[in-house]
Length: 177
Image (cartoon, rainbow, N blue to C red; front, side, top):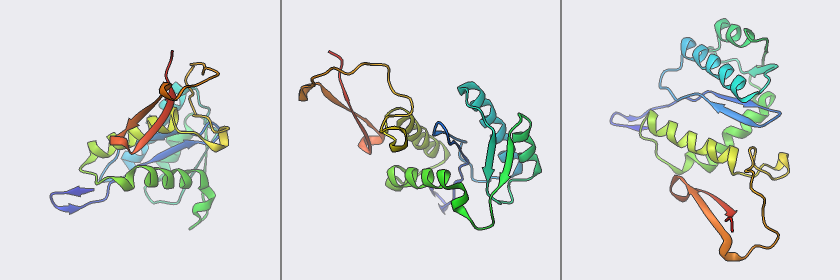
């Protein structure tokens, strides 16, 4: 992130529900600490409940920010916490792949100017990721497809483009007749 004092690191905490591929990203922060991580774990649990996502196991890395209070916050709702092996990012490959996706498709294309800007970019990407982006593991369908029924024959004039983030993210869809 570019600030008046130069480049600074902003941190995100990502939760990914493997079965549904739904992603929850905590608001960005300059100072991730134990209390922030615990607060985000509780926010994730509330989000998972509201979306009807069952959380059985949470796999996390060995970062020192994940203290026993974080594990307790996750286990409070009956989920099990598993700690990945030392220096083994592939033990959490789904999240690592999502990080690569959001970096390549969104964050690498912008200079971020603060926490609100980062949160805006991430939320726009998440909306695109969940509602418009095709997922190969889900039959090249969006995670939350629209309820509209596509017509059999499509003329070129009935195809529209929806752009996000100034045209960086594009989604083509059929317009209703």
